[in-house]
Amino acid sequence: MNNSNFSHDGIHDTFTNLAAPNYFYEELNRLVARYERSQAEFRIINITFAGIKNGHESEILEMAALLRTLLRGEDLAARLGMYEFGLLINGSHYESLAQRIEEGWKASVDNKIALNFKICEPQKGLSTLQLLNKMDEHQ
Image (tube, rainbow, N blue to C red; front, side, top):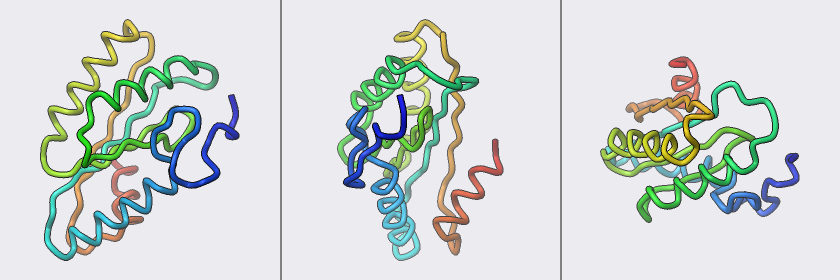
C-alpha cells in the first residue's frame, strides 16, 4: 500500500472513505475559530497503531469501520497517515468514546495491534498549529 490511496480531492481518503487530512485540518481550523468566538467545546483525539511499520491493510479498514459505527454525525474521523487517525469530537463525550473505540478494537482484532491515544482540548489564544504541537508534546 502506498500514498496513492490518499484522496486527491482533499475531502476523502479513497482507501477508508474517512475524511482526508486536508479536510480534517480545515475543519479543525473552523472549530478553533468557533472556540475563540463562543467557547464551543470540542476535543481532538489522535489514534495510532503502536509499533507497525508496513502492511495491515485489513486492520486499517477495520479501524475505519469501527470509527464510522461509533462516531455521531457531528463528529469527524479522518485518516491522517498510514496508521494514524484523527477525530474531531464536538462536545464533551470524548472520554466514553475513546473507551468504546478501545473496547471495540480489542474485540475486533484480538489485541494484535495496540493503540496509542492522545487527546487534546482547545485553549483560549492557541492557534490550530499551537494546539497540535501541544498534543504532540504529550506523547
